[in-house]
Image 1 (spheres, rainbow, N blue to C red):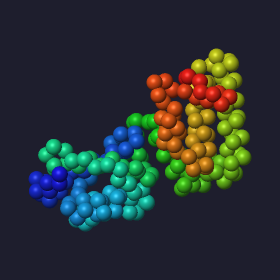
Image 2 (image 1 turned 30 degrees about the vertical axis):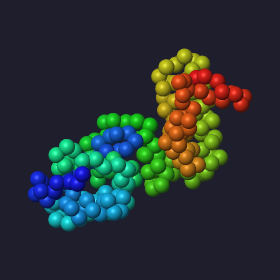
Image 3 (image 1 turned 45 degrees about the horizontal axis):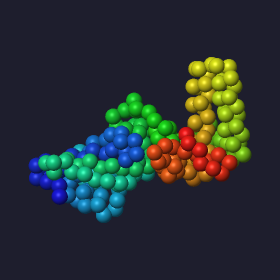
Image 4 (image 1 turned 45 degrees about the vertical axis):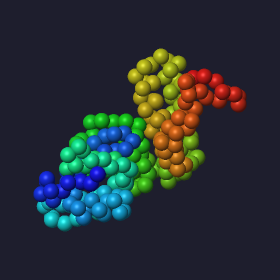
Length: 207
């Protein structure tokens, strides 16, 4: 099924959606040339109605949108593209042009990745990554200890706070080691049958 560019005066309305979180990232428009370049290159191209030219999303910032899936609506005049965004989608620096009200571990992972890959002076993440793996591991250990202490003290709010710190440092560690949350999710899927399971002393135990 091919898009019908005639209904929109030669343009197709396009919605970008994060293929992992399903969050709506932005709306744009494509003409036939932009659509074809998107198919050919596997990254999203748009047609700018104000500049009257083709433009690749992320051509200036480097935050390109890698195509994972494409689906036309029933009238063939609107296109949904599920993408892997390489950095913030919005030109204002947010993950979505519709605001950052939604938050998830995947959102935090992307923020950490952005800070690791494009370090800024004064950034704590920059400090950690420059210090290297030993410093990152030390901080992970310290935060885990804080989680234990908060639990022993039966301090709910402190436990929430320290768990947040631990998760952040774990994501820095994973990025440092070239591991994504998706890799972890895939490993959990492998263990998923009728029940989740994990290995204890080499044997499978039920979660």
